[in-house]
Length: 73
Image 1 (spheres, rainbow, N blue to C red):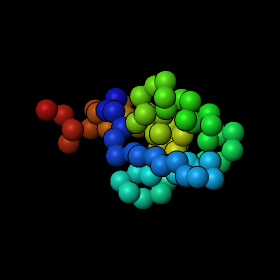
Image 2 (image 1 turned 90 degrees about the horizontal axis):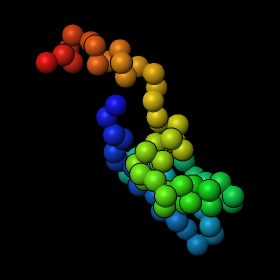
Image 3 (image 1 turned 30 degrees about the vertical axis):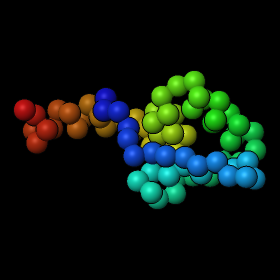
């Protein structure tokens, strides 16, 4: 599975976290969810964590896309 890329996050003074994907806002987390997200980002791969939190993670078509004639070597 290719590794996700293009995600970034910013923390704000009011304890909210905004996750962006290629400079477009993907989601905003507040309160305990923001704290949980920051804990996970600190302990794991940030790109994978942000992809999972935004819902842009493993759509189920990865194997189908890999086997498509256009994607074969």
